[in-house]
Structures are given as C-alpha cells and as structure tokens.
Length: 221
Image (cartoon, rainbow, N blue to C red; front, side, top):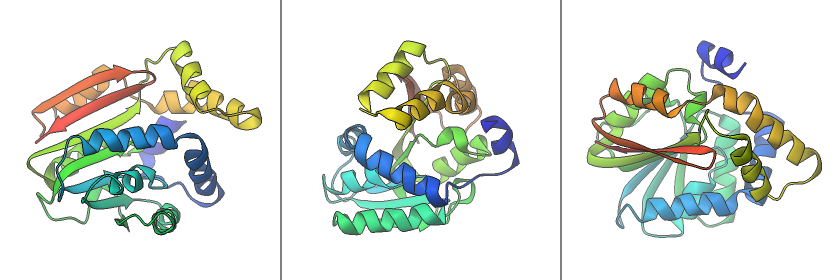
C-alpha cells in the first residue's frame, strides 16, 4: 500500500494523525531524536546552515538548536506539521525556521546549506531520485548530508527491540509493532536500493551503514 500511494504523489500527514505523531515523538522518541541532533552537531561548526527535510513535528531541529549557534531551516510538506513545528519551537525557545514545501522542488537557492538531514521520511517520497538531486543542489560544495530510514531487510528481533525501546503499552505498542512489520517495512528500501539510487544521483561521495532497524546514508557533495 505504501509503495502504491507514493507512486501517485507526495502525501502529507495531516489532522489527527499529525497530532498523534507529535505526541508519540515527544513522549517516546525524544532520546533517539536528541541523539540524531548530537551526531549532526558533531559534524558541523557554529554558524553552519542546516536543513532538515520532512521534519515532522520538528524535534531533531529543535534539539539541534540547543547545541550550538546554527542557522536551522526545516522544510515540511504538511501544513499541519509546519504549525506543530512552530508551536514546539516556540515552547522550547528554539530558533528554527520551519517552512512549507516539497523536497522535489525546494524553494532554496543552490549551494545554500552546509548540512542536510532527513529522518524516517525518505521512503515516503514520490520521486526519490528527484529528492536526491534537490538535496545535492541545495548543499554547498563540500556540504554533508545524512538520511536515516528504515531498512527493509530488518529482522523481527530488531523490530521488537525498537518497539521495546519506545516504552509503549497497550494499543500504541500493538500499533507500532504492526506498523514496523507491515506498511513501514513495505515502503522501506534495502541497502542495495539506496546504493543503486545514489549511483544514479549527482552524489559521488557516500556510504551506507546499518544499525538496528535503520540504514544511515552519509552524503558529501
């Protein structure tokens, strides 16, 4: 189903599901998202221009804003998520510029950003090849990027460990376990899929690492 839907167009998360995703991320994934922010901060210097693509509720950018003097922008397809991001940033006094837009045609000048990050969203892009071209376009020469997303070849044990780490209970636990085993995994890419897409992209310097249920794709322009 996930693959079928994304063949038609990019789909935004809206309404009640966007609010649930925000709540779930805030209550059960902040540690994981803060770890992503620390990894990014370790790869950039103060003053760096950073872009988060498809930030959802915005917590990686918000956590990153607490770690240094960075110029952070988040581009999100969902208008509902943009409003959630802005509210979350205001509540935590985080300086992040969240804007609405599509990764396939980002409203940014070429070579604007030093670093680019995308978490748990790449598998949802209607045109991943175009997304990679746009990511390459907006990065400065020498700029770096990191895409983290689910590994289609993840094991049952790895998926269980991921759900266990979220400390969920009741329906939410059952829903997340079902999601990882079905439509999230169905829409995900294998390591070889990423390698094939990257080989056809403008990026010539990249590597892919596997950990847990995820693939980390490291890019450099």
